[in-house]
Length: 311
Length: 311
Image 1 (tube, chains in turn purple, green):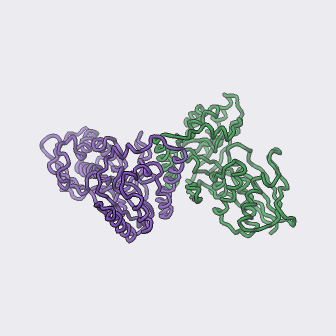
Image 2 (cartoon, chains in turn cyan, green):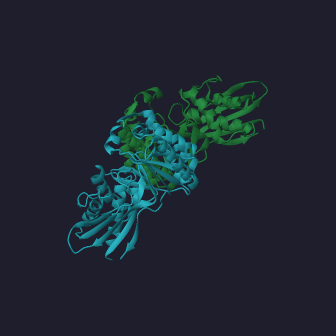
Image 3 (cartoon, chains in turn red, purple):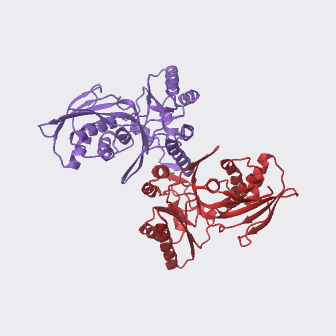
């Protein structure tokens, strides 16, 4: 084997009441990474496509190479590698773009090196890439991008990851209004202190959501998709948030939330038809506001990252 | 049918990271209530045994009659009833004593009146009794006492109750140190504001605990049984709390918590042998302190309240 190409999907992190602990993988949008053996020592990013020239080729700044370097360090390996990144996800949109690149890179290099690690064991390497990309070693995008489905990050010290079941027929609509929202701003509006009452409400909702995933009780899932901790503050940074929420509820959605730190919103629905209706009303809301928007519909992705080709 | 006798088990509320939202039913300890048709109008408590004379016979103060009155009011029924309460649970111990009385009374009257309500529909009537007994219409004791197993109270407005599965082989040790602890004191030590970080940790743990119940992953259950919101403050009101926690961990327990608002502690273990070992070390800890303690071992009760006899 001389070269492996792998794919990793987009993800939604901060899933409503699962603020900071829950993410899920989305449909078939994602990034592809090809990793090839090289006779020259070290890691080289030989090409990046689909990013509009915005991503750094320097190995120490690129999430693919940072992840692969962490992987090689753990193996005490010193293999020279060439890396090609084909972006399928828009940057900075709250769809886990940097995480998908790292996840695809790790799937490819793991296969190329004889699969020394399980998927779950790859997560910490991808977290190193998140540290470079976002300033914090979050797992709530990288873990679902690698593992697929809904993934709970119960704890970080030590890392405790729980793959959760995906109810059949669960569709997501992603709504990406064309505004720039800095993660720093999105974090700064959060309250450092919250009321005990809000914490209890959030606990009840995440408990209901986890139960709903195991029992495929989509009505319970809908009732549980409420975030009283982050959303009330972050919603103010997203134009049209409340109009949109009302419109998608009328369209029959189960529930919604802010993906990652925004500005993308995710909506969950119990059929492709409702998810498409949600997409339509979202376009109407943003047309009225006069803001551009990208909207897409996809199933929740139960598979996560996978190898496309080995040569 | 002229008279029905029903049983309802003890319960643990505030199950660690499930503070204010999660309870479970315990073994075969509990209260029995006999409800008999009477030609005289109104509700009468004709006898109470096992309470050491501490419980009120007045209908408006007794949890059995308050619950039954709420039940009759909903039916617009005006049946005269005689009520006999046989307490099997100590009062004010944090084992859901008042809840078990109300739950048994409701099971009995529901059967006597031709089962107009499901078990879940009985919960709001029992909550009325809790309002009288504790000053707040909690459901986290009454719901598991009626339904059995682990029960999530996701929300109160409207009431949203989720019965959760019970992993096989899960045993609880109840440790009741002989101190008096007023619920008001136990509530007053709680912080009204908590850090966002603690709220996220609590969310991760309750999510892990719910997942563990569905997958019977008892190790995950043990890792998740951590309460960072209430326990750090309430522990200070319970003599020997930290020595005890260390001792039961050494004895192999999965985890522990304060039952209700204390002073009873519950411990979960993956076998009857470990639960018994936990009981033994608990007695040793309190013997060293010089404080009396009641200790008991039981399975988690998956059934809840049931009718013993109809005549």
